Image (cartoon, rainbow, N blue to C red):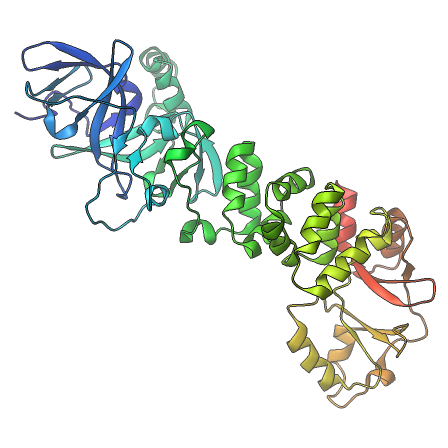
Length: 443
């Protein structure tokens, strides 16, 4: 007997299967379809069992015990054994985990939750489209006697289908616009790009794993967009699984009102690792938005003493002043060095310094005595001494207590990319870049 005998289309839709009546060979009604259990550890998962409801209780029947499947009814073997359960035992046979969603069920997980409970009407991350969407329907494909999941459907047509209005809406659109793309185009996401974000009720049975390459290769700005589109639970789950470096880069791209809440959810040790991977000025700005006790706990867990001291110093300044905006990660040198010495230092310190656009020259007391642009440095010969080519007569700098609006006006007036920040005694403390000011102007 052909299991899909009366189904002409190769594809099936999850929404159309809900409520299908299930009978045995003798015609005895057993219940109605409620959901599906699938082998999540396949790139296009096969259906393992059908979950059905009878008298308010949930049961499942193995797919291999099904004789006939259509949108009107399902027939199972007389001797099929129904099991009462809300979950399905994890398949134990060896396999190669290939799909993103499969990573959530590796390891110690012993029970699979139902498919619809995981993704239907839930937010998912489309790692190919780099966005968050809500799933309206799920697409299956017939493969011999098997039924396999192939796509998540997220468009208007799938939403209409879920409302059981597909036939009247299709009829109306065919009458008004027979060539409408709505009639032929379903907005779908290939299952291999689907990353489900489990809700709080099923988190115990789902292990989120973000070590896969698809998510690791997303640009921090794309990850930030995804985090901003998720609810607080999904946001927390993704962010807490990022490694400290990627978390820091992503945090710098997230809206300021979300930054503190994301970091607050981390323990002090993990938060300290993230802070160490951020620019010190950004880190200080972020910590300024958090409770003092949490800040103290984070700072005390920072391993790099130099970074710890720099952040503590920045936190002493009002966040609306130059001191609160500046970064102490600057490239400073002495006047006795040559051009070749400076270029060698740039190679050594390129990961430690925020910007090499402007080079600052200090004396033995760490006072600012000159400036030099990288462009100016490059046009001189290798043996040129910094003291002979630096600008020491028209040094433009601002005091640490200058309000950020005055900083903006000053940098705009002199068309500056960066501006050095000094103490009242002219000691070089840090610098502000145009990016720091733009963040304030645009917020």
